Amino acid sequence: MTTKYSQQNSIRVRMAPSPTGRLHIGTARTALFNYLYAKKTGGAFVLRIEDTDVARSNPEFEKDILENLKWLGIAWDEGPDVGGPYAPYRQSERTASYRQYLEKLLEEQAAYWCFCTPEALEIERQTMQAEGKAPRYAGTCRQIKPEDAEKRRDAGERGVIRFKMPQNTATRIDDLIRGPIVFGSENFDDFVIAKSLDEPLYNFAVVIDDYDMQITHVIRGEDHITNTPKQYALIDALGFPHVAYAHLPLILGPDRSKMSKRHGSVALGEYREQGYLPEALLNFLAFLGWNPGTDEEILSNDQIIERFSIESIQKSGAIFDQQKLDWMNGMYIRQQGGSKRGPLLELIKPYIERAGFADAFNKYNFNDQSSILALVIERMKKISEFVELSEFFFKTPEYDRELLRWKNMTDEEIAKSLSETQKLLGAISDGNFTTERIDAALKTYAEHLKDKGSVFWPLRVALTGRKASPPPAAIAAVFGKLETLKRIQIAIDKLAS
Image 1 (cartoon, rainbow, N blue to C red):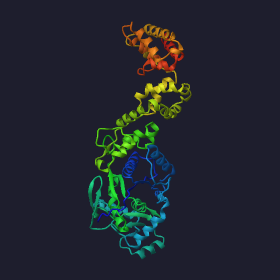
Image 2 (cartoon, rainbow, N blue to C red):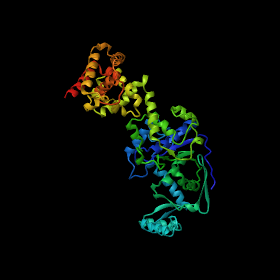
Image 3 (tube, one colour):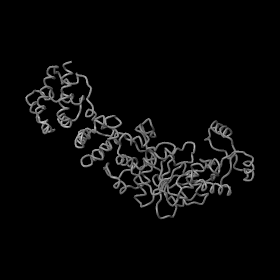
Image 4 (spheres, rainbow, N blue to C red):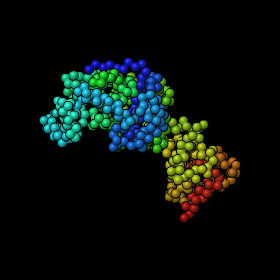
């Protein structure tokens, strides 16, 4: 078969997800690469919904796909929600076009009605397997005359439409990522292209849609490679120009098997819910199978677009490194600090509310909320982690009195240290109860002791109920004098009970 690409000057790419589940992380990566290529080349990016599987398609899944792609920062030029010159962009609304081309193939005897029952096909499959052959349709109905097929249909016999795959030929795919791939026709049987004139299947519908929407380049996962010869054959039979294909490497788990739920979250929305920033996730997904050719790992959307090229996409599978995603997201979170703390606090609020700390959080003014964020932001990998890292600011901690003990200190020594600390901090005026003033007072007291830990450890635990936390002086400054002294007293009372 010859390969004749569209002569259209402007590049048009598409993403065609099926609304049969939440947006998969792999589908999002494919959408991103299409988007990047369109932006880099000045082309158009089309979003098309493949909802011909009526039983499994769900409007809620379509909503999830659209919302999460938009959240990720991927915008399309044409689609079901924005329209475009080649509407409609849902397959369920394109039945008339499919029927027209199905009738054309049947009329030209490039396709035929098959009346083989599922039971007969299963027996055929088992027989071939027993003979050590790859299961394939034997072409039983290939020679049925069109008029005879029509009579059988008029009599109520149910059938499907199969495409006549060319025999004794080879199909060469000049893949933009993988180079030439050749498929022999002996590997393909007459496959089903429609359950009826109004029920097209994937390999057929996608060819019609790509032609009708003037798609020039199809960028998709490598799991679609074996579909390409079938689509080439359909394209030739219909007289359409070929599109250019680029098959992306699969996203793999750490064990190098295909990414699945056992490796962690696979729905993009789950990462959004966990508190990953869209900029970080987009940056991370872009590097799954592509790199800019430098050691840089943090790039803005504009930088990624500027440096993106299909030639730089790797052939081998891309490992989904959760630790790298967490590191990258943490970097983006810290970029949101400083002057951008307001928007970051807004992102944090839903997690605070979910944890039941909204009232306690709102008792702090904006500056104190910002101070809390500044104290924990270095340890945050996800927005959701703010709650766990800072919850002692919103409720009095519960802890065992043993946690107050530093090394071999006795209860009396711990109580004395806390009492002295309480007196020192109580002597600081409310207006001067700052991190610097508190820290200076504590260090002056600790200088006269053999072990500074005997001052700072019990105080840290009294304020937070934890072994690890931000510096006690900074925590006390956010609490204010009254709450700080209250928590120290609770610790002293624990030792006395």
